[in-house]
Image (cartoon, rainbow, N blue to C red; front, side):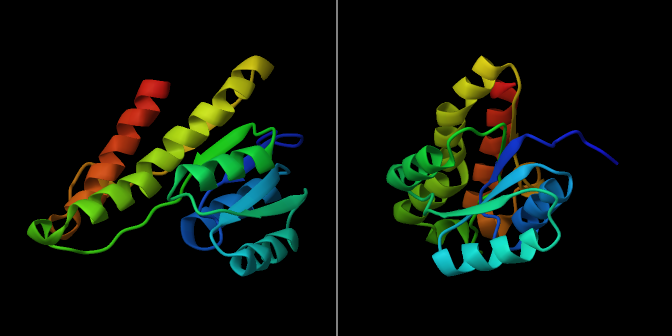
Length: 168
């Protein structure tokens, strides 16, 4: 199948392993230039190498911690033009609701929600100006069926669903 992505540039956050890695690999196989992101230079370089071995396009890597606005700003600036933004980065930890302190709530919200908000604000104007672009939020069934042991995670996944609908 040809998704006609040749010449498009995609940024996939949290793409050194798991779902993000699979998305980045698939986009690269379809011919999109892909920017891999993770927190560690080493893991980003390893993912770029693995994806490049099967890619039909250029694969780049940018290490940046998306748990704070500085990391997101640096990623957006280094990424430059982006046609497809896949907000995949996400963290979770099973913790009973009564044991989730404010720090944990704020940290998971910064990573899972605010990274996508900040990247969309930075990159969406260019997409609109060029007349083509896609912003995707990778949520989870936890956004609809909140897990009792991960209420804070479920709340962030619900927020992503609302963000994607609101931006659309």
